[in-house]
Image (cartoon, rainbow, N blue to C red):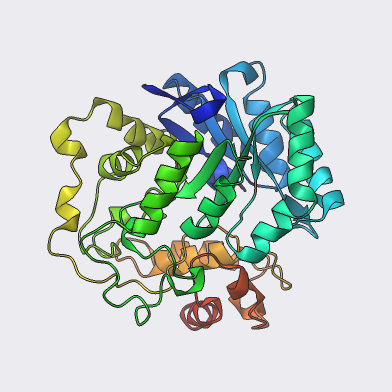
Length: 381
């Protein structure tokens, strides 16, 4: 495993890290196996954005006696409310959730206190003109967090956050598809075929490049999320390029962006981790991603769910990402429909419980038409 310096923090991190979000709702044995495999490959950086109590507890248990081997990104503003994940800038809620994270991970510090999900001007003001940044600075002064991070999907907003000079680490969604879309497009339009017609051309977006260079100038390191685009780039039928990329190509693309220190790959099984770390032994030909930019036109995948669950909380308590995941699985030829149906029917709330309020669509960072997807799931299942 190769290591990179995490910007001005001076922390040394593995260039491949573990994004732990897919470990939520898994048995402890699965969580421990993933953590064990990561550490066995000398991976040392882990992102824990999830507010769900059990997965936090299980990750803490899996790291017991090995806390010193883990650089943890713990999120400030991801809360657990009414039995669901939610985002908050309410100081009381934010504090309670962060203190819960410390308790459940059985640690007295977090390496990177990651201000959670800043995608709009309203988000920006809520953080930098409100209590959130003050709380983060207080935590850093006390040594409870070692550095201040921030997660975002929108380059124009992310750059504005970086230019405050207060952000040590940026967690940003980076992959070949996202990086050729205009950075000034609002997030709801990124997956609209009509609005981005002709946008996905043979060049990298200047707003994204400006963000990467701003991070370099400020000494702000980038940790990458969504490197595989929730697995879509690995599937020729779903890839916006019309061809499948390998995990190695996706990782290499992200690692070649300016200021990137680590690519945090969402893994569940040891095999997932082994596929990711195979990058370290890959040759230049295996890493080459230039072919995907040859002869390609506009982005052609509107409203694709990447299963991040930022659409929550749902008033009907639907796990929206799970519904969309089962819907996608059911359309794949080699998946047994009966198995998918069994998982779907085992959910506490299904698409049939949707009240079509549309609140989820306002929160979705990828412009998914959630209400339409729920109707599709009802019809299919």
